[in-house]
Amino acid sequence: MGRRLSGKIVIATHNAGKLREMRELLAPYGIEAISAGELGLGEPDETASDFAGNALIKAQAAAKAANLPAFADDSGLCVTALGGAPGILSARWAGESKDFYAAMDRIRREVEATGAKEPWRAYFISALALCWPDGHVETFEGRVDGDLVFPPKGTAGFGYDPCFKPDGHARTFGEMTAEEKHGIPADGSRALSHRARAFQALARGCLA
Ligand code: IMP
Image (cartoon, rainbow, N blue to C red; front, side, top):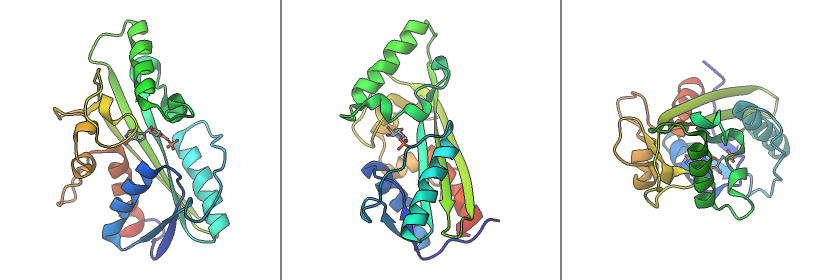
């Protein structure tokens, strides 16, 4: 059991898609979430070599700047045939213009070039870090495995959602509503999305 979280927290992200999903996940726990963007906080460089390390950098910087508990996620898509790429570089592959269709096409071209047989396997990872102003930290991780789908399908969600079909489902994340993508069962059994799975671990540890 980790340290219990209550009241107001800062969500250390400047990504509108992730902010919306995190607010949806926190709402049932009565946690008021303000974003680092709304507070005018800067974005620290993500210099760690893994997802959890980058989440921690962002949460620590926001907790210190806002003097409130802060919550950050770092996430991305890892393609097995590409040795885990784009991984922590998932946002960067979309470039300045945040063109995820170009990034998905780069994945298709690079996997094709490896000669890997279909189905092309991939997984999303979400690492969550909670940091208090006194320096206490808690980290959690969630993962969802699936197949890559080309051409990408669906316009819901964000980022790489249209090219990822989670195992056990017939549709891509891009074809699912937010509720379907999170897939949080009322009975407390395992959620679907990497972010919801990491969030379940956080809820068990810090919100119960
Ligand atoms: P970061 O966590 O801000 O470094 O960015 C991770 C990048 O991975 C995002 O910009 C998205 O493109 C991608 N990503 C992470 N989670 C998801 C998801 O749930 N769906 C689609 N793309 C995602």
